[in-house]
Image (tube, rainbow, N blue to C red; front, side):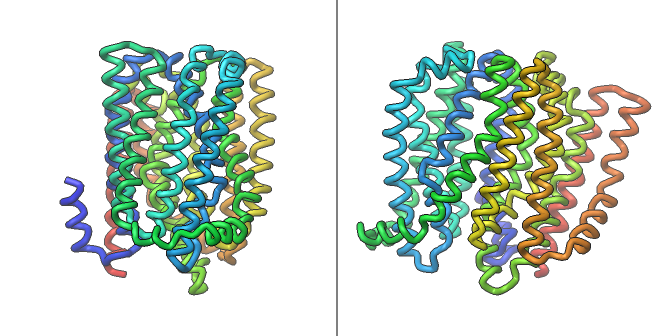
Length: 488
């Protein structure tokens, strides 16, 4: 089915066009997200909130370490003009990744039990032995991901996403039905899915691009290590702070509130980030090389306007509809035990809205070599989130913590968009005018569910109407964008 869709796409869009590359990536992401959505109601009945809480702790720790798996040299792979230089950066990233995995193994051997006990999840300790293996899979994926992005091999990345989601879901469901292993079923499924998908991506990369690896030289690797030293110096700390600030609620809330609260937060966050993963990551990844080329032509500002408008258009209505029917959505789909997660997403939604818009725009900091701004922004956001969670934890009020966390995060990502506009000399009035037009166009799709909730509130009716309105808006938005791309 994916091949058939790709054939239709090829007949409508020119090779290498931005929207074609985005849609190619989205074919894999759509399948992956659809599969995880389909199995989620089953998994929430096979595993308890406490199981999901321990699983969330494992993935959060991995997410923090994975940021520095390659010391951020993988981000530089897209930038060199010569593929031979990029190939040496790829090998450099791979070598650093294995070194970091060895260091992680030592840390796990020394501190796995104290860390698990501190987080209130002693059952996590034995699974931390697998953290180095997960880090290798995550780090190698990052390196091959940016190499494939540079080569514009987006089909390869789409296949990787499909592989990971399929293997992960099958393993988690199989172990859940057959063994009832608790959090181990979720963790083992994630590990096996990562290894299978990254191994396949590495094999495809070698088969397709092995001619570039014939030019690998030790002295060339050393040159690239020095030439792009600003990436580990600046972006390692920036990326680490950004990721820690995102994963921080999971770790600190485990300390203050226990694994059950974590599970509600994580499930709500993941449902909200479906559009982020489905569209945002694909657009952001495609925009990086596209924006780099636009910068060389002196057209980066117009590209920033175009991409910010597209992102706002894609996410506004779905996010607002999720805010309207969030608690009912989680109760009906995942069961009564997960209604709290639906209450959380009401306050997390503004954050996800602005993060979705700023996701591709963050590439501008790399394109303009302004990693210093990125570092300052991520540092301030990290400190603010630490303070918020510490205050909420001391008051023993998880809902208040989520409320303040979501609102302040939204404000910070809004400021990030403004900074990008300023760096690229974008006219704010032009962007604001386009945003207001999108809001006006989307109002009817939002108004109908609001009226139902106010005057004839029936949960299943509200959910059905909201899903229908959101689907129609997204379908019409994609169709109009697709048509414009064909005409251009």
